[in-house]
Amino acid sequence: MLALTEIPVAGCRRLLRSTAFGRLALVDDSGRTELFPVNYVATDEEFWLRTGPGTVLDRCADGAEVVLEVDQVDPSRGVGWSVVARGSAVRASVGPRTSTGRPAPGPPPWVRHADDVWFRVPWHELTGRRLGPVPDDQPWRGASG
Amino acid sequence: MLALTEIPVAGCRRLLRSTAFGRLALVDDSGRTELFPVNYVATDEEFWLRTGPGTVLDRCADGAEVVLEVDQVDPSRGVGWSVVARGSAVRASVGPRTSTGRPAPGPPPWVRHADDVWFRVPWHELTGRRLGPVPDDQPWRGASG
Image (cartoon, rainbow over all chains, first blue to last red; front, top):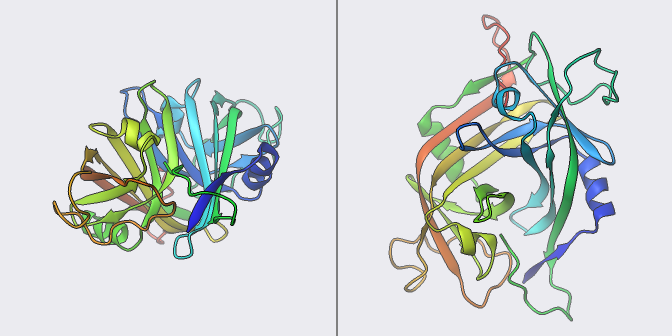
């Protein structure tokens, strides 16, 4: 049987930086929960998102709480990890791409936009869980979801 | 360059049924947006979740709108797909496992719980997008996020 164990913050930070693809949840201006895949770039304290004008991010993210989930799970074996970063997004669209502390080159742009819109998200919460076999001395835990 | 194209509903349904692992977003009873990985089983019109007592799902999902995102993306090549299903969760915990229309054997239980808690989510919205190279005749699109 498997168990979920907490990942220490340092490990969460390392895992978040190890990849550049995740899913973002936020509540839009009509109160609707939106959930969609995103590219991002993480530093040790924040992550950056890039989008185009008119998207949900562009319309709703500025000042809003957003939640980023990143994982690497092998569902067939039931092993893997998931990290969640939560913070308020700040629009950071003015100035050249590499200024104002933006990471260069930034998140890989999947779709080309006439104008890039950037958001910086300093997280105030960073948590992670690892899924794997139960150690012998550990009782079953009801910790999912 | 790459583009996002809509996936027809039949394709979304097929992709959702092709896998059993995704991420679920919901707003909990304190107004906080929660986002976490889940196992699920989808039929043609709904998906099923299983969890344990006391989890966020157990406490908050009944009657709540939940959003499930499933994807398969190769970030390095920028190709893949993402499907999002949205619906109101209905607790379905009474009775033997295979009764009341529950799929058998149901979502793979990662963590063993003393008591299973089930939710059925008939979706009222099912959308998907595919990411891939831009066809020659298609202009760049600003459709991400």
